[in-house]
Image 1 (spheres, rainbow, N blue to C red):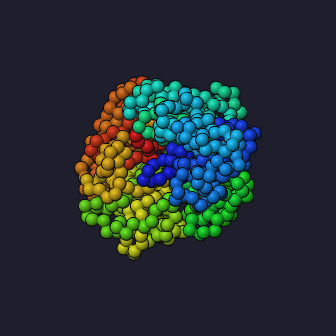
Image 2: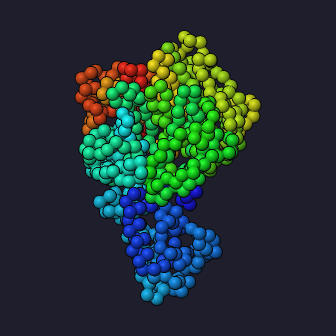
Image 3: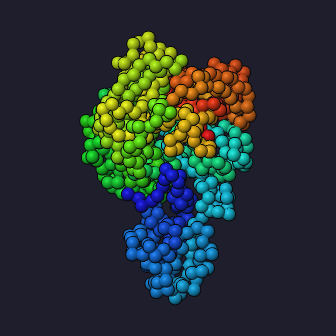
Length: 632
């Protein structure tokens, strides 16, 4: 496992990790190592506990003469495979160079010069900084806004293309002159192209299409990953996006997946085993400049604790298609798969191929830091149903819906859950207790087995909630996979997400979650892309409520053009515990939709409640896509 700290639920993303993992930083550190190796052994001064991450992500360092620390409590402890020594011993080090493992370290380097071993020189990690033109805040290198980065699965091969869509949401926080630095890697991990794209000022739409990129640079067919760095960002240090996969010619494939999680994890979960007639491929994408060693990637049936390891190494930034049946032969849906990858991968994608169509979705971070919360079973009545996970039920006259709870923390041994099903008006039409499910359960609820044919024929939603009638424990990190299937075309789409407490004035810890300010989060700003090339955009908007809140939402659909200019708005009322299936072209005239253009979008805005949404596209061939929306 890589000895790196990536994300902490309390502190947020680790800026040092993103600074060391940036592809340009990797090149600069490799060049620095080469210069130091020509001189001889290196002593590392490590005042901020950086050496472990540095050597994990960039292990090809020159011979190390020792690691030296200032903190007396760290003395004698292992650090990056070495025993930490006192900084006062530095003059006796057998080193030609002293490397200060820190950025913005000029002052510290000056203080250390009198302590250098005889004949030694001193360098700092400032020699491996990104170019000044890529820094949003050049005064403080480890400012999180200097590393507003993310990864995207990116493909233009075998009749399948990808299109990344987002908006310049940084403009809402005062950013101007935002631009994207991009690097595309091929399957072998080699750079195919590096370029910049200017983002118009204001909340402009952004779209990067793999077919356009391939034509612009004259590239061969590729399947790899796109590294994205937003320069000039404000407010958010994560690049949020939706990624469409679409087929050309006779390929009827269409799917969408949410942005990557920006930080690698030890484990991921929520990957389905293949059903009969399906092939499930996990896209193993190395997020770093260090190879993934043989055995570091493994798959396990969730709860089995018998992982099967991949015997091959994965080169830096490389992409490999792993058929899950190669490691877990005979495993079939509704069994679930856990990925163990030792922090080598940012949230991976999996692809399901069936009947000539492909769909792609993402796994989720399996938390290792959570433990059962004994207070959740006895939350006070003011919090009503407490944690709930809203999932869409697309119109049942056309779509079949399956819902599968998914363990998403290593300490989750039970999932005591039920389903509450609501029509668009917020009336509960069904309830079913799923039991106190075990970690290795294979329960997937088909709503056709729960509801008469004429119920929710126009759609609705279901809430997965905790139910402790048979015991069990909970940690608030409740997840599920929702799968929809077109009854006529056979096209399938799926999404997964986690639970929150929704729309209560009372709070518990950081719930109801708020993206701006302290909880409770009682407002909505969701991004909905528009359709293109004959595909209609839609959203399944849900007004989830843990307890009684406003009887109806006061939602506004705000149509913007590709430059971010508001064109028109349309009101929408959604009942508490209800839902609405929204097609922008039903709310805005054709002339306004045309004025919005291919990079236009809709902002779903509400200041009275927090809505949760799923979005996608539909085409004339029975294809559709589905994943949860993002907000900012």
